[in-house]
Image (cartoon, rainbow, N blue to C red):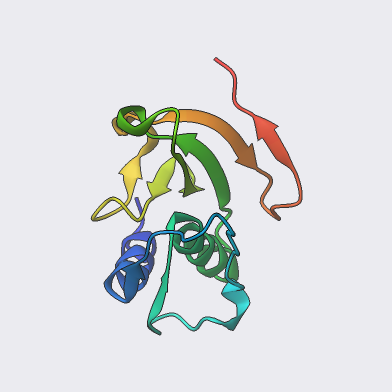
Length: 121
C-alpha cells in the first residue's frame, strides 16, 4: 500500500464526523466541494465518496463498493471505497485489504460511478 493512500485516508478520517442517516432520505454529498483536510460529516456513502474523489484527483483509480455488514444483515447496507484491492471504510482506522473485512460484497462501481456491476462468486 502506498504512503499516499495511507495519508489520504488519515486526512479524511481525522476530519470526518460519522453521522447516522435520518428519515430515510439519503442525499449524497458533492465531494467536488471538499478540500482535503477540511471537516466533513455524513454517513458511510459520504466518507466513501470523499475517498473516491480525492484518490481520483491524484490519478489513483478508485471505485465504490456496495456491501452489507453480516451482524446487521439484512437491515443495513454499507458503502466503501476500493483502491487497488485496499478498502477505505469509515468503520476502520486505516486502509484494509478487502479479504480482511467480513462484509458481503454485492456491487462495485465503474471508476466514474456511472455504472454498477454485480459481484458474483
